Amino acid sequence: MSAPKENVSLPFKLYCLTVMTLVAATYTVALRYTRTVETELYFSTTAVCITEVIKLFLSVGILAKETGSLARLITSLKENVFGSPKELLKLSVPSLVYAIQNNMAFVALSNLDAAVYQVTYQLKIPCTALCTVLMLNRTLSKLQWFSVFMLCGGVTLVQWKPAQATKVQVEQNPWLGFGAIAAAVLCSGFAGVYFEKVLKSSDTSLWVRNIQMYLSGIVVTLFGVYMSDGAQVLEKGFFYGYTYYVWFVIFLASVGGLYTSVVVKYTDNIMKGFSAAAAIVLSTVASVVLFGLQITVTFFLGALLVCVSIYLYGLPRQDTTKIQPAETKSSKERLATV
Image 1 (cartoon, rainbow, N blue to C red):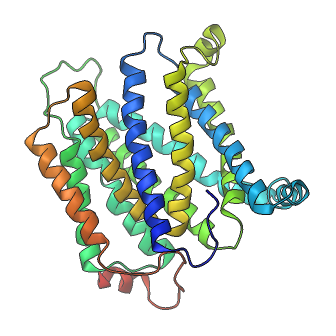
Image 2: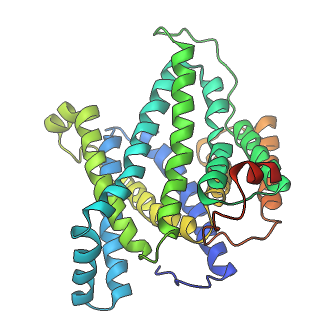
Image 3: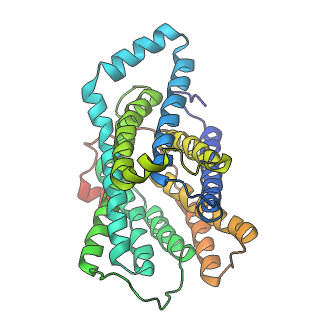
């Protein structure tokens, strides 16, 4: 899966987006199966950690193929990984920010109704577009902004579940919930676009950047295991509840993570968001067949909006494989263009 460095063709971009979408959809269905059908429930924190480890080894393997020999691989790792603590710290930022995002999402879900959470959390889509404009000096047309907000509405409808009259067991703080969701949305937009900026700001190999990020990711996820399930993991074991299906889910997450980095490198974070939305629609359709899920009118309308928004966003053609020069327009002008 070693990608060319220059002049990436449209078929290659479409291939990566398609594979990423299909893997994400399959992952969602398989994950639901392992969390609802398996009798001995595994620790999700350990699965996330193992995923980071596998992504690290896969990236080292692809870098070995890219460098062409063991000696050049070792030299590359010495220069770019072990000999560059500043670069390691730079790539630890997305891992830390994503960890904060996940915790903020948990706080938000604990203090807001599920329906309110579903709607407000989708603001991460326009937030990513805003970060793309401000951090990467890129402009979006009015049609592209319209398609971004259409996607936001479509995903909300696809995931909409009618509010149920259930008794709330814990006291909720709406202001804390909205504050947490705002932090999660900002973290999501910033982390993704920050990683994209790092990838496109230098000629450093994508796989070197992945190795740098996954090393910090392993540390962050190990800390997550300790904080969330430390006592139970010590009692039952790190791989408690693991089955062939669980390993399949981990494999999908690993492959999906690598393809995501390729998509970010050669397209952009907004396209990644559109791909994720398409995966939500596909996985929901698959759940109808596998789990007997009922298709609702809101899902149908949401899926239609997602499909139309993907088409509209793809109409204006521009090069997103490079960061645009900063001197062309100010931030206000770039926002006014849209």
